[in-house]
Every structure is written in C-alpha cells, then in structure tokens.
Length: 190
Image: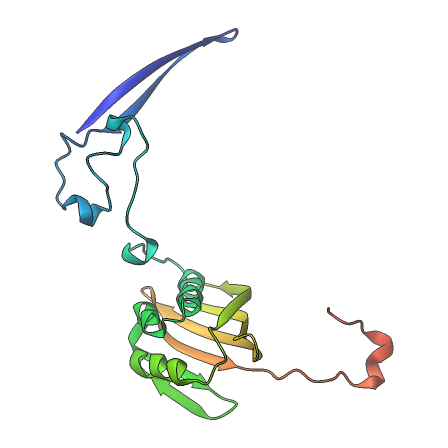
C-alpha cells in the first residue's frame, strides 16, 4: 500500500506542489518474506524516518543481464573473487572454453573451476579490464591478469545467450621485443 506525502514549495517564480509516495511496511502486502525481498524491516524505510536499506548483495539478486558485455563484466568480477566455483553462475550448462594456441578445450563449469583452482599461483589472482566490447550475444575482453609474480594478457571472445556464457575462446599473447627495423616509425606504449 502506498501513502502520499505532500510538500508545498514557494519562491519568487511561484510555487510548486510535490507529492512523494512511500511504501508503508505495515500495510505492504508482499508475496515474498522480507528477507527474500532484501529488506531490513521494521527499523528502516521512509515510514520510519530513514532511507530504505538493503541487506542483499548483488550476488544474491537476479538482475537480468541484457548484453553479452554485461555478462562478461560479471564473469571477470566473479573471477576476481578467486572463488572460481562462483563463476558457474554466468556459465551455461553447455559451456566450452577453447585455447587455440595450445589446442585445448575445457567443457563445463566444474572443470573450468577445477582448472583455475589447480593452476599454480603465487597468491590471489587480480584482473584489470582494459576493454570489453560486444553486442547482444557476443563480446570481446582485453584483460591483464597477475598473481603478483606472473603477469599475462588475455584476449577472450565470448558467446552469451540468456545471460549465460556458452562459449569462450581465449588467446594469451606473449610480449616480445619490437624489431629494430621499424624503430623510426614507432613509440613505446608505456
């Protein structure tokens, strides 16, 4: 049930009447219990003189991701948690990862999580997103990855359908010294 609160503002240019609507927790006929709606009740909200507070983190919300780029951004956010099993929330049951440079394919979220968990590291992995571009069903990301000792750059091509990644193809380019024959034409990036 909504209840209005009216405020009259007056000034040199005239007056305006503003009406703001508040949800009244005592009269709110919800279909879900407060914990599932993400509300802290009864001590919060406009009816109690304060803003509505939420105790639900983004990971518990089912926010639809409309584009592949949004799904890929969430993929890298989950990867940065270093809880590789959590990445399964954005992977399709038919998920496939391919590494053409080494002629390898990984099928399924469980193997993906196990591979990342077992990969030798010197500490937690961190991920710096340089760029993500995409359409509704395809996206490409350029990400730097490090554990503090190892440093790599990953270019990934994603296919995502209905908010889930179905296919990922990754390239891990190795840096190399620029040839001297073009030194007069180029400048260092860094």
